[in-house]
Image 1: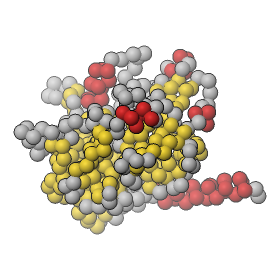
Image 2 (image 1 turned 180 degrees about the vertical axis):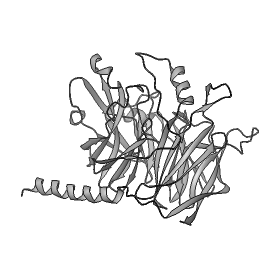
Image 3 (image 1 turned 90 degrees about the horizontal axis):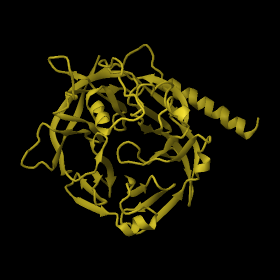
Image 4 (image 1 turned 60 degrees about the horizontal axis):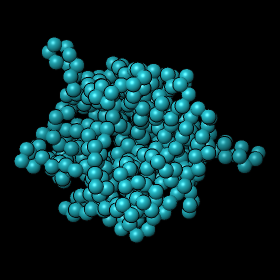
Length: 390
């Protein structure tokens, strides 16, 4: 047996083991969880954070050994608020953007991982790793020929972000988004013109080389949802779970290979409505986002070996008219992706889009304690679990 065959055989065996670990058996978890709210654990100022798809784009990381919330301002300044009360800021000056080929006014993707800042831009096919003090910059070029598959499809690096597409380690590889753009008008009616898959890259001193590309859109997924074309992912070791906003199931990958599609469905999910048409104004898209049900993200809790999935519930007024979301659901799964509990919260009390995992519990942005005299301040509630055997 050749070395390639041995590697394939080994990967197949490992894939079977992963599938067995995550496969749902008939038995249910032998415990239930009840949420315990512990009051405000942390607060910081976020008024000048750049907007994202679900409000202000706020991330969570460790910096200098401390847990902190961070975000980018419109002035290309990264603000970091640590648990210990320390406030730091890192300004990415125009000279650095010019040095790496990013125009001063150009949008940048960014995230912080292991005390390094990663940045990129949709205009260039490289990603840059900056030391926190900005004294060193390492450029990693991506050869687009490695990810180009046919003449109708243009590909390049997608924007990294502090929320959805972080630079994540998956075993020996790093994960980066790959932006897709179809140019063939005949294909465009069947597949969204812009979306992202996930690239698993090997990293050397000067480049990142694609090892595998995965998480294509599920078949028929965008027949009704052409304008909602992003996914998100969470990582546990060599395993990646890909979350699609308009699907009751997630995809389970091991080392870039699809192992299984697993249902993680909210009890409030009853199908999805999408938008169609060659062009829709941004207000129509925003209105649809604010009113119709969808999943936001799937998150892995490394401290408790649990998975969470968040779902926005469709709301209607007394006349039966659809109105902006009033409720959201938090689905909790055990390490085998078996449902433990499902909880419902008010959107005006707790944010469904800021689910940060810390050693003490889960941080959720608290809207219920909003102070109109300090509108720039965001407060974060600490949620912990009380476990009960059944």
